[in-house]
Every structure is written in C-alpha cells, then in structure tokens.
Image: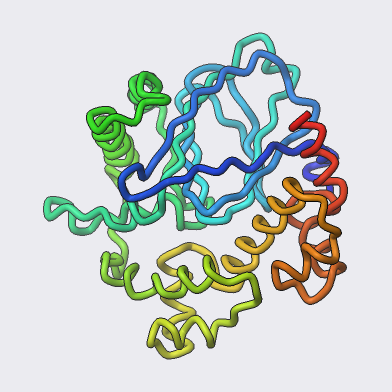
Length: 298
C-alpha cells in the first residue's frame, strides 16, 4: 500500500482502550523527538480527539493528508482509518501531542438545554472537510486546554475524570462556537434506537446485513440505512466489516492460528477476502501483520 508516494510497512499495535460508562475516555501524552520512517495507521471503535501542543505532524486519512501544527486538532470517527507521520524536518522541534480516546456514547448522549442546536458528535461524524478547524485566534486556547488535560493522564479517580470531561466540553464549545445548526439534530433516543445493531455486531463474528440489523432495531430497511450513517458517520456494512477485521487482526497477533482459520473465525468468505481487506486497511498481508506484531511484542 502506498499513500502519497510513501510506502507503508510499519504498524502500531491497536490498543485495548477498555472504556466503559464509568470510565468513558482515556488520555495519552506523547512527545516524539525523532522522525518516523513511514506513516503508521490505526482504526478503532472509539472516537479520537488529538491536539498538537508543539512541533508538527502529518495526519493521514484514506483520501486526505494535511499538516497539524501547534494548536491544531484532529478528529477520528468510529472505525475510521487514520495515521500520522513525522518527517525529518520535524526533528528540530519535538512533536508533543495529547490524544483522547472517547466512548462514542459519551459524545452521542450530550445534550444541554442552553445549546439545543449543537450536535456534539458532529466533529467525529461529519466528512473530513466539514470538521472544525482551529483559527489562529484559537490556537493558544487549544494548547492551554491540551496542557491542562495532560496533567490528568493516567488518573482514573472520579475528580480527575470529571475534570477531563469538563475540558473536553470546553474544547468542543470553543471549536463549535460558530458551527451551523443541523437541519435535524440527533437525539439520544435515536442513538438508543440503533444500539441493538451495535450489540449485534459486537456479539457476532459473521457477516451481518443491513436487513438483519434493521430488523433487530425494529426499523424499516431504508430508514435504518439512513439513520445509522447519519448518526455514526459510517455505513453499517463498513462498521460491521471493520469490527470483524480488527478482531481478526487481534487474533492473528495473539495466536498461531492459520490465516484460513482466522478468516473463518471472523466470518470472511475465504482467506483471500480477508487478505484483500488487510491490504486495504492495514497496507499489508495478514502474515506480514502478524510478523510485525511479533517483532513489536519481542
């Protein structure tokens, strides 16, 4: 796989965020002082919000690449492939970032009567070109919020979690200050209505169709298709496929099962189908993926 002329061969391990209603987010603080030889890519169910505190990095999405400098933010939606790259030009100044992994239900369930028009999930579900962009006048405020967030990395007591939540809302309030009101702002009930489809995906290791998901949600086929993509920012078949693909990737990394067996375990029609999806999403074959994980895990 090549992205913008750069061959992608290295990968990072997909973390297990283990988020819950009691702990709906997790913070990470990274400071990189050396360039990466190639970009690395990831995708996960959890939403992602990142802030660059110093230096800069290249951010990658399936059909876009852009530079994030100090004070910029990035958003990643559910199962959205994304990656970053630190060029040698970045080595003169360390690239420092704060990354927040967020349980989707946290953002989906936010509602405040003072701002009934605000869709707090929008930064994660809108197309890339419509997501919030930091203005020059907002950069110092974003960096300040990011530094205050970094003080709570690794802390899980209720006071710290509450303060992280407040900082998350402070940042979104800043970035969405001039966001246009959507025609139909989603409600928490609408997310609840499609939750049976999410449960169906998470408890099955096989292909699930739109029709099956619509039936379990007690919706018509076309209403379910429209609502799922509007609420989650991704089609249901893509959501279900990427869940199975990441499950297969974890099984490859943690076991010595054959590619054929893993493909069957996760509902792929055959190993060639899974191999094609690995190349598309991870830029390598399943066996190359396993080898890279074995090297990383020692």
